[in-house]
Every structure is written in structure tokens, then in C-alpha cells.
Length: 380
Image (cartoon, rainbow, N blue to C red; front, side):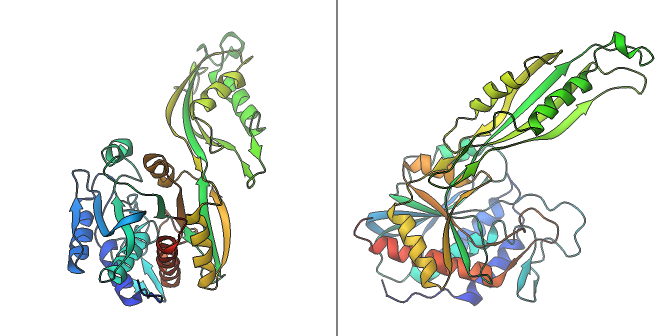
């Protein structure tokens, strides 16, 4: 492998625009998967598209083995855009469109990295994995069949933000877990002229919400870096008629948990939280996923920090507040997985989404240098 590697900025931007022009909502990734496979074959890399429209390709062979990942799907665009969400408009150093930042910038960066490495004698093996169903759908099913097929000693996910103008690159070494609980509160309906004869389920919900807002039972740790839990009520429904005391109220409680906690931990804590509220309350786990946290002395972390510094950036270790696909990949591989940013901060899932070209290109350069340093590392 050459000592000096270059990201082809023009290629990356054009690939990004093509990707944005190809809609890929969860469950609708076929077209974008085929586009990615075609572009890999164009640069001489054999690519396979599986039944879930994950795309897999390999450069080199032997050890060490490294995985590079980005997800193909995006959330739907919704309404209220001032530009065509599938235009791929390039204007004032930004590419606009649904997924431009999250996460087609990461996909385009992977293609640019693959182009640079395609004709090189690479030490070790780099697996390129473009995944479907990150934003929604049955991701467990879409990932399960990859286990055993893909082997790596470490991984890099291009699924985070970077601030090239501020010269800041966060190297993500973990993320918080997530749990969604559906709470149903039962009261007793009555005519609202005699409210004392009913049991107002909404009032009982308010009692629970007050305890949640006070942060009862939330945990935090200081090492290896500060991580604090959060909990929010994200959905509420109650009442049927203006003159009827409501006999039912339903809430969704969203927990963001310490990385090592099972999502069911949130269920047990909520059961304790509702004690003493004068209503029948049913709590069930709706969805959840455990976070992860890797050893910050891992060779892949050191490689990423040094790669960021080589680009003139300040490198900071971080634990993502939101859940990341890297958690699932790390468990699938039984190996450390980091996240490096190619996104522009604050541009995920918003109207008129864009990515700054400088962010996407700088993130790609950091990722390419990380690949180079890791594969050359004797400790990898």
C-alpha cells in the first residue's frame, strides 16, 4: 500500500449525488444496493447483493481483517421541503437531499475509499459492508444471516457527524442503549359533572410523568468518560369524549440507557416507578437494543485518533447519545467497532437535509487513513 493515499473528491461528490437521486427508504433499498454494486464493479471490485439488499465486497486477503460499514437506507423525506429531496442538488459547497448526510455521505466515502484501494496491494483484508434496514424494518433478521459470513478483527462505521471547519473529529467508541415501553393506565369512566366518582387515567399518567421528569432512578458513570441516562415520554393518548372522565391513557416511555444495560432493565425500573399510583397499570416492552462500549486502548481506536490528527483535526473520544448500528456489528463480530463521521451535524432526518462537501471529504480522508494505519499496525 502506498504511503500517501488520496480521496478523489470529484468522484465522491458525484457518487453522493447519484446515491441521493436513488430513493432508499427502509425495505426499499434494492435500487441503491444495485447502484452500489455496479459502482464497485466499475472499479474492478467484485460485489454481492444478498436477499436483504446488503452489499458485500472484499479487498485483499489474510490478516488483519477490517470491516468498513455504512447503511444504505434513509428515513422517508416527508413534506415541507424547499428543494426536491431526491435532486442531489450541489450548491454552495453542499449536497442537498434525503440521506445526503444520513447516510449516503458515508456510502459515497466508502466508494471513494474502495476506488483508491482497488488497484493496490493491500496488507490484510478489508471487507466493505453496505447494510439495509438501519433506519427501520427488521434489522435483526437482515443482520443475522451475515453472522459467520463476515469476519473481522475490528470495524469502522461511517455513520456519525464531523465538523471539518472547526477541525474536530469525534471517534465514537460506544453508544447508549435504547428501550421503548408502552404503558397503559386503567381508570374508571364517569360523567365529568361528578369527577370524584371516576378514576381519571390521565391524572394517573400525570403522576407518572412527574416522576419521570424528576429523573427518578436515572444512572450515570464518570469513567472511562461521562455517560448519563435519559428518559422521555414520547407519545400519549387518552380520553374519548369531552364530558367523560377518561378510563384509559397510553404512553410511550423512551429510555436511553448506560451501554452495558439490558433494555429489560428499563422495564423493571418503570415497574418500581409506578408503585403507589392509584390505577391499574400495565407495562410492556415495545422495542429495545443494548448499547456497547469498547476498550479505548484498542488498536482501531489508536489508528482513528492518529488518522484524525494526520488530517490536522482534534480527535476526541465519544459515546454516542443515540443508538448506533455499530453496537450490533460489534456483537456480531465479537470485535471492537468505532464510528467516524462523514455527516454534517444537525442534518439527520431534517427537511432540506444537506451535507457539506468538506465534511464528507474530510471524514473519508480520516477513514481511509484509519484503514491504512490499522492494516499496517503490528498489533492489529
